[in-house]
Amino acid sequence: MDMYQIEGAKSLRGDVPLSGSKNACLPIITAALLGEGPSTIHGVPDLFDIRNLRLLVEHLGASVEFSDGTLTIDPAGVNRDYVPYDMMCRMRASFYAMGPLLARYGRAKVSLPGGCAIGDRPVDLHTRGFQDLGAQLGESNGYIVARSPGKRLKGSRLSLLGSNGTSVGATCNVMMAATLAEGVTLIDDAAREPDVVELAAFLRAMGARISGEGTSTIRIEGVEKLHGAEWTVCTDRIEAATFAIAALVTHGDVVLRGAVRPHLYSTLLALDLWGAELTWVGENDLRVRRSRHAKHPLQVVTEPWPGFPTDVQSQLTVLLALTPGESYIRETIYPERFKHVHELKRLGAKISVPEKGRIQITGVPALRGAVVKATDLRAGAALVTAALAAHGTSQIRDIEHISRGYENLEQKLIDLGAGICTLPVADSDPGLDGHTHHDTNDAVSQADPSELETLAGDVV
Ligand code: UD1
Image (tube, rainbow, N blue to C red):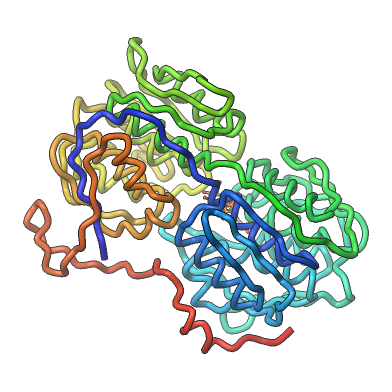
């Protein structure tokens, strides 16, 4: 296990090139399984989640090449319809295999995802959507088994509204399944996130007939076949937001290269209200620094698109922790997504949880270095952001969570002038504070291909 050691309180300055969007890439990779020929995807970030998904599609029988950000997938050899538990528990996005497998081969057996560090993450909306398309679903031994009784799924009108709003993942999965269904599908209460729009555009490039993406009703006219396509993925709006906030908390001056302006709308609105100076210095290049105006505490609610993204909630918490006055954040998408709060307090932040799903942040003048632990991807990003601002040295443990979602994070930060390095953690490492560190979280690791060989799946 490695850790980041960060010497904080250094202003970040310079340009940072943004990577391709992880969350847009993941469904696009499984969507490529729907094509009769190979697809080529450019701008793919080299991340653990992407490598794990690559192993998954290879496990299904597809051949994949990945170099210099270009991933080529040839689904010609797909001969399995089975996603084992080991793959599912590494990454929830493995469930994205279900829609394409069901649509193209009429059957799929996918392990149920387990619990998750950011709270309960059910898949009922995915399965309900598949059932609405005529699939028969059953559960056995922790697996969801789905079959299409006819040769093709059947288009229908369906809603993806759950008790917690709509779902990005279910919208992507059901949209993929509907592309090859017989007849027209209308998805009501669809998620409107850029990742859904990006997937729809890729599917259209494969020959799918889709309209309405980005609104709450998506129309899909099923076609008999899709072909491979070439696609360049948009840049990562969550990575952009993370660097923007890192620039602000370090009193820096950073240009985000390749930012997609409409994807950053609500994040930039919040940063503008706070008092950031945000200047577009090129069509896709955003300069971020502090303005001379007072820094304002904020009251923010995370919401589905176009609301403030839950994936930026933890990083914003760091900014508000260093802003005089009382700020509040209400998390409506994952009410338990506050694992970073405890660790931020170790750095000196003053945060309380007055009720489930809401935090109160009392600004402090400065944070100080400490040993902290990343519990999940975005909590980890918040800890890095906080450590960059903090006075003194911090150590961030369990950084494999962070590598799941940030490409070349360390090098990008070094190029901006940060004092960051990766060090190995010994089991008996006393840390900065003298406490022995025992690593208990080994859930996120890269899949070992030899291990997957032994997991024989059903042959399609
Ligand atoms: C995606 C993103 C994740 C982001 C989240 C919300 C990927 C790989 N991940 O996750 O980074 O935080 O969107 O923007 O793109 N829900 C149900 N039933 C379901 C599915 C979801 O009740 O079947 C609930 C969830 O518990 C949650 C809400 O719906 O409360 C939104 O979840 P969803 O949009 O599905 O998140 P993901 O697609 O898993």
